[in-house]
Length: 134
Image 1 (cartoon, rainbow, N blue to C red):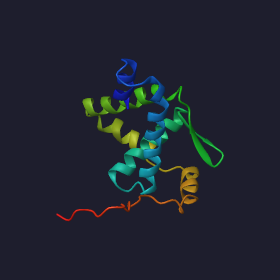
Image 2 (image 1 turned 180 degrees about the horizontal axis):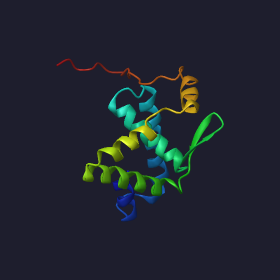
Image 3 (image 1 turned 90 degrees about the horizontal axis):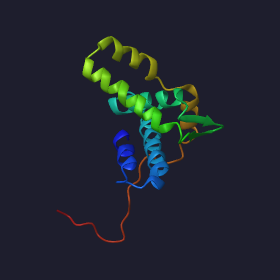
Image 4 (image 1 turned 120 degrees about the horizontal axis):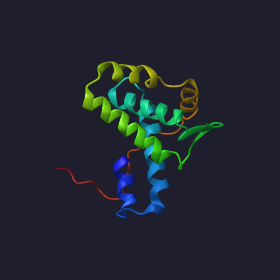
C-alpha cells in the first residue's frame, strides 16, 4: 500500500481511485481476520488493524467501521517504517513488544465479526459454461 500511494503521487495510478484502493485494502483485513488470528496472515492483519485503529485511520462508527482517508496515508507510512526498521535492525525486543501490543483482537471487533456470521467468507462461483477437465 505504501508503494501504491507512491505510484499515485507520481501519476502512474489515478488519484481519484485512491479511496477505493484503501477501502479494498481494509476490506481485505476484515476478510482475513474472520478466519482468525492463530496463523501468521491473520495475526499480521490483526496487528495492522490495531495499528490503524490507534492512528485513527480506521474507527468504529456504531456497528460498522469507517476509514479516515486523510489519515490512512500517514498511518501506512508509519506502519511501513516501523516494520522495515524492525526487520532491518533485527531488534527482537522491539518486535516482541510490537506483537504484545498489537496482536490481540479487540472485543468490539470480535462482536462485529460475530454479527456477520451469515455473510459468506468465500464464494465458489458457478459458471454458465462447462469448466474444462484437464
